[in-house]
Amino acid sequence: MTGAWQRLGQVYLVAVIIFALGPAAVVVFDSVNSATSFPSPFEQFTLRWYAAVAGRPELFEAARNSLVVALLSASVASVIAFLAAYALSRSTFPGRHAVATALIGPLFIPEIVLGLAILQIAGAADLTLNLATLTAAHTLFVMPFALRLTLSGFSRFDFNLEWAARSLGASQGIALRRVVLPLVRPNLIAGFTLAAIMSFVNLPVSMFLTTPTTATLPVSVFAYMESRIDPMIAAVASLVLFVAVIATFFLDRVLKIRIIG
Amino acid sequence: MSLEKSLAYLDLHRVTKRYRGVTAVEDLSLSVIEGEMLCLLGPSGCGKTTTLRIIAGFEDIDAGSVHLDKRDVTLLAPEKRDIGLVFQNYALFPHMTVHENIAFGLEMRRHTRSSVDAAVKEALDLVRLADIGSRYPRQLSGGQQQRVAIARAIAIRPRLLLLDEPLSNLDAKLRDAMRDEIRRIQREVGITAIFVTHDQLEALAMADRMAVMDKGRIVQIDTPTQVYERPAHPFIAGFIGQANLLQGHVVSMSENVVAVDVQGCRLSGLSDVPLALGQPAIAVIKTDKMRLSRTLPDAAIAALKGKIESRTYLGPSRAFACTTAQGPITVVMPSSESAEFKVGDDVFATWSQQECLVIPGLS
Image (cartoon, rainbow over all chains, first blue to last red; front, side, top):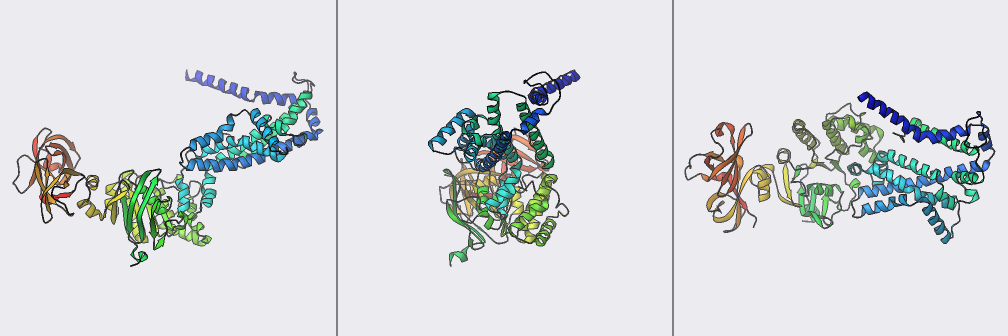
């Protein structure tokens, strides 16, 4: 009986994994398929779609923009999230739950609404749309993700540790850096990573706030797909996937930073 | 005499602390003598831990002042006070080894590497824990963590050592050993120390002097013997030791012998504080100073007539809960003398007059 349930559990697990990773496998499959339409049955292994990507410098430019915006916005968001989570967890002022909710709130605003709103504000304030304004907008929208994960790191934090550091002669700043920060670092890194990913893959916010020279990768891919759909896009998606896998592996195994599990 | 000269080593002067309208510490004054071990004793919520945090500099106060070693530290940040603190949960830095934990305070004081190492070793030797410097706190037992916490607090050679419920997280056997250990360390270093506890036995056993706190105030501060033998307040009489409190009013006084009328029964006892005729007063008799008797003893011995309601065997002694016309009382007698008394028996509870203490009552 137990054996049957166990077997059923294994089948379920495999099904979930296929369901979760299947789409990515399809994209990789299409990127090495010689068929010119997309999607179609497998014909022959080819790398010509990857070669086609190499001939499109604007995609690399867009990828660079995406990376810069993702890293910058996730960095700024993480600093804000750390300070906010520290303050919200440490103090007991009335209304701190309301403040936390207000800061997490943008998570529930549809990104397309947020993008439109920011565009209007940028227009009203006569701001130029460049990478700086795009980074600012991304910071705004990824901050709740970073805050959510950082707050959970503080949920059972023992603030006596900070007081212990203070009584031993550390100023508040040093206590923060030497004691508080190292202990919530795993959550900060998880928050930073999630924020960076959310920024990197974002289309709705970027769509409103990019110009041809500041296009991000999702915007460029989207623009390309509006004109035609060919397997080169699958190659672009696969490249992003490979980079993500390598980066995760590097963080996990080399820097020993646990993002997964 | 100038204010500075009249100050004790640690001096809290009329300190008040409120948390959004709720008073945690009220108009509290406290003088601690250099080199002594003072205990703040009281039930939870009495303000003892808040007082400790005020001394450590973790809490801003609403009124009053704090002086340490002739210096006004009222507004001084905790890191500038030179006070070592041992937290109830030890608060060892989990991401640092034992050595790094103890070295932390010394590094903050910009000691050189070699002097830090020497001081860490000295501190570990003091708490009798050599060779564990490279371990992490999670790899230590509760008792070892406690010792490391003490070593970390003492390594910085603080002016004052504070201990918050130092024994509460240890099991009973370890507690007695650690109690002696903390006293040994305190005497060896010759440091002035204050510890907070809700455990009266801990306070009686460890303190040179104890301050009993209730509702944000100190209600009595004296040696453990004096507080135990001569509680100055009904709260302490009820809190310290096991005592029967019989509420009445003063009917006569001569020298320091006071008679109290309790529900028509006249009880005589000793009093240290001035009382007035007719004033509410409480006759305090420790439960283990009372005896049960079947017959009314001679007139020189005080007695209350009552009936045994319950009997509890405690090993070396038995506790009897009795009802009397003057209210419920508890009598604790050695087991060897009390086997004959059963639930439902009519008995007399007796005591000698000098075992009865009369203190001002609550009006």
